[in-house]
Image 1 (cartoon, rainbow, N blue to C red):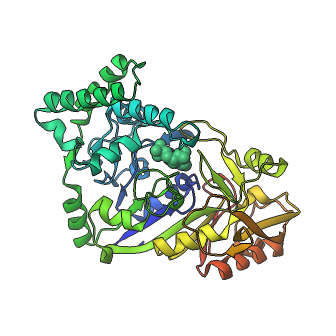
Image 2 (cartoon, rainbow, N blue to C red):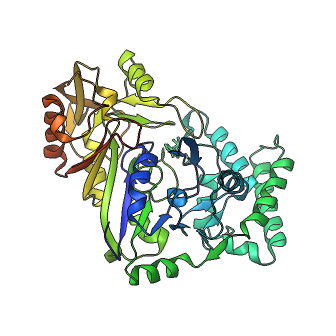
Image 3 (cartoon, protein in one colour):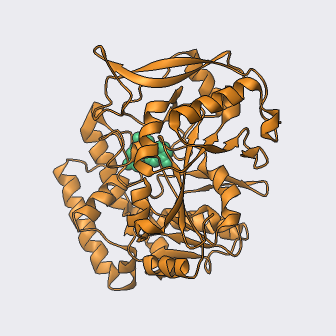
Length: 422
Ligand code: IMP
């Protein structure tokens, strides 16, 4: 934690790195927790005081009384889903209204954006991205084409603005011959959600954050998705539509680069990906199934099977570079406990060509592996580095040498206590 700075906590591969658990360890150190990108396509599972919550749009600092939580301007927000998420927390006894601020500049996901998401996916056929169906792409497209609605719009003459945008979407859907949908009920809940959002402080959050930093407060920027799903740096076009990287922290919260302190990059001891797109380390065999089963690799938002594979050092090096990662956090090390041999992808290969740099077009590349001896020991009861099996220490040393970045936090099990700081 750095006073007067924004530290970033970012998934640096394909998301689902287990940020939820780490945020829970991190938040007590910070005054403010802010989301800067994405929306309800995220699903951060947090187990707090024995209860399980899946946060989609709300920052994870919400469980910690006394923390301010901000949904920043770079986010997109669906009022109906926000209302459901917030009401669940309110009925569990958490006070949200005084501690959750929403940027007036964040964009609104309309019910028709979700229909458009489905329509665009259907039109792409076998090239579909496999989106979460939450309307993310159409909402960010609309933001870029300067026709979207922002949270601040709900405060004035909203009905007319909403009706005009919805009518345009309906026309677009007719043009796509995508007419078999009914949003009547969904729209009612959505409009209720819009009213409900008025109970919260809708702010100029960039000014608010900068003033707090001037006062020496510390801010944690909580990432969503991962670097390889970033609109610029991911495996385009199989990406999400926001800036999930450190650059996105600056634009998505309205802070200058000189405000950024530490950049924590989270990754798993192996790889997963949800949805379509290149994934050179993907395992289609029993080992992949074994990783999925032991690691419980099923999507938090969609319930889909996650694609599984060995750790990808090409992707990690790239992500460390584009994010300026200063410290690494390795999750789910214990999932590899039973393997005799662990593999790490050290390069990609295609048509006799080998590269250790992330290629422009990741399609068709195959992973080149280095085999590493497994530790074959249960890590879950370990509480300090002194108890690490030698082979596990060797694995960490290998990763740090390759990635040229220290791994300062290691997770060896789902519980908060199963976290080792180095
Ligand atoms: P979208 O963000 O719903 O448009 O989906 C675009 C791609 O990003 C799809 O491959 C999704 O599966 C993936 N994606 C979006 N959000 C997440 C996430 O939170 N974790 C992992 N994958 C995600």
